[in-house]
Figure 1 (cartoon, rainbow, N blue to C red):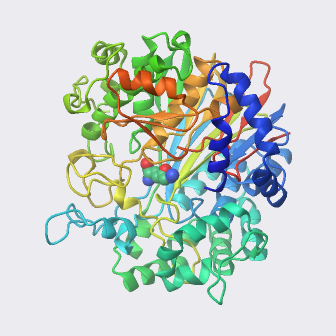
Figure 2: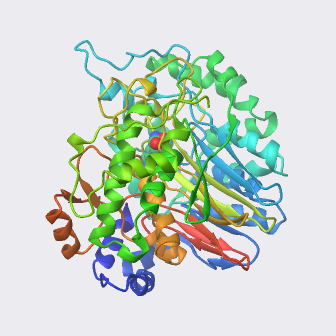
Figure 3: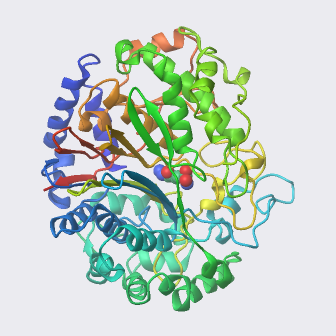
Length: 587
Ligand code: DON
């Protein structure tokens, strides 16, 4: 991440008190920093204006922001803009923007007083089986679950975006695809982050001739900032979707190319898997925090359930008073996080296959029970912290963007191919990367996935099942009005990143840019440590260590693209400076 170092160098200069002033200073400093200024020249205006009356778009790539904003300006709604942004990101930010992966979209309509979730998470192919990632020695084989053709789940993005548009949008699929097709066909100017990303993934990408052809020049050299990057195969793939709808991806030539790629590399996805892939419209999980209505993604994501669980635990502590990123607040957040992640390891999985006790996990009574186990001044060792006992079962590099329109609609979308560049395998002739989402299943009970997350039987591999996710697109409403639209990438850190944006706004009253930029912390039960970004003061770290916490400094965590709508309807965008291409614009 090219700007992370600069961001972190700047943020350590900030005073540890008066943080709101500090963040304003940070934003000023960022504009003045030479390396960032140079990127800005290359990458265009990224945040102008981030305050607007009509509509607001915040994405991780300025070209996607621009194209989605045009849709809003021309009278389209937030869903039209979201689908346009998602297809544009698939072209301009192929490390995470995708058509070969999956994700979740929350859509809030004030008019209908309804929030719905579109689940377009990948599914395990029909031929997948519980032990498919175990080697001869019985151990989980990371190379197989993360970088092989078998690591790919059946992609859901195209079907999910098409469904969103058909049910909640006004544009045709062909129209929403126009900017993406143009940018793939004619190319776009490579920004620093794009060329740095490919350099860092070069070894793995070069292993596959199909990936080498797309991401490197014909002579094998790197695309440099300022070069034009053209993707003819991807343009043709997108055109087939524009002409034939979802079937133009899940059947016919693209499906044939995916299956041929599977045959070449021993993958499992078949024509039947593709033909039968269906996205689902689900009820988001819902909670209430200090009078705000929180809507977020339920299973097969763990995100929403645990955000609400952690908020419920924290509601009993005066964390606005204990203060933003003070040792006491960080301690309370970490303790609540650890308890939620312990529960995640046991209870969460695809609710089409296993019963997930969502109501128990998100109940105020269970939160109170957990809260009583938290000592105000002493860390609980994770080894002593087992998954709790919620009320019984009841029937019951990722990228995020947020969009609000002038009609009272909001979209919060997180989608992914799992790692940056997913499996690193491009479908030959179709020009897009395959996900490696199968690694989000539990390869073996008790064995961690790439994010150190442990899960159990609820998340074991089964044919056609969706792998557990942490993606947490979230919409907060106040008095029936859309108030905050947020979410983030970051693997296991997605839940805690999104949570902290909520706390920063609701408890600490930071403006949206400060709420997104502020240094973050993370605890996921195991490993038993609080991870902190630069910007948490050494005094605070010492106090936490004094309570018995292990504290480790980490690179930047997450990248939250968020919007806050004030009571007079003004939309404020907060683009995350942890991604140098992030962009918030409104009109
Ligand atoms: O669904 C999940 O939780 C993960 N596959 C997300 C991966 C991710 O966020 C990587 N990005 N930074």
